[in-house]
Length: 265
Image (cartoon, rainbow, N blue to C red):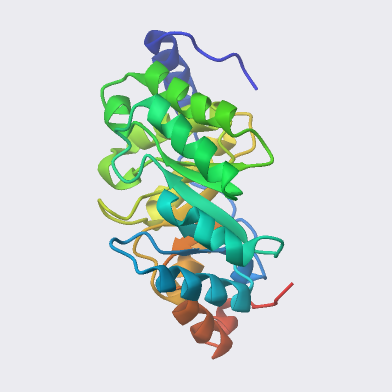
């Protein structure tokens, strides 16, 4: 991976240089995962939540062998009691949903979540600073959480694509990838959802950064058809509160004929 810029001006120059090299469109469709259940982060982020809803969320995730359950910090310990030692991971949101939390607060949330059993963290980046061209602060915020929760903990950087323009989304992708996020995630779902255009643009920009960074689509994905569109665009993980509904649609064959299959590992 290339050298990390040390000033906003250097970041702006690097982003501009990468943007010049971006292809105008994706030249090939990425392979679609065959184990659709293993792409799903089964999500419950609304408030308030009754503890029994966390129990149900985890039981559903284990039944369908979803990739993770995704919850708020206050529910991590309870969720961990259900999924620990299983094939289903536990994701916790950090700095959610605004991304305005001080970096020290995000670091604290990250450390506490991992201590309680989280295996992945979905952190909201400082997208409002990115819109001002304050790339260094955005990068340092992500790196602080990455350093507080190093691999094998998975780190997903939520870019909030719905409030970013195309050039800003490219910049956010580059900064997050170079900060060593494992995934870049489209949205919190609080300010609009994911689109095929977001996923495609993020995938192309991530591919130009010289580092491995996967895509998570989240926000407004409620049907098997929605999920399939995101996977075709290049997402490898899907955040949704409609995972059970989607799997029932898949089992009924609504997307099988479009080229996807469902196989439980």
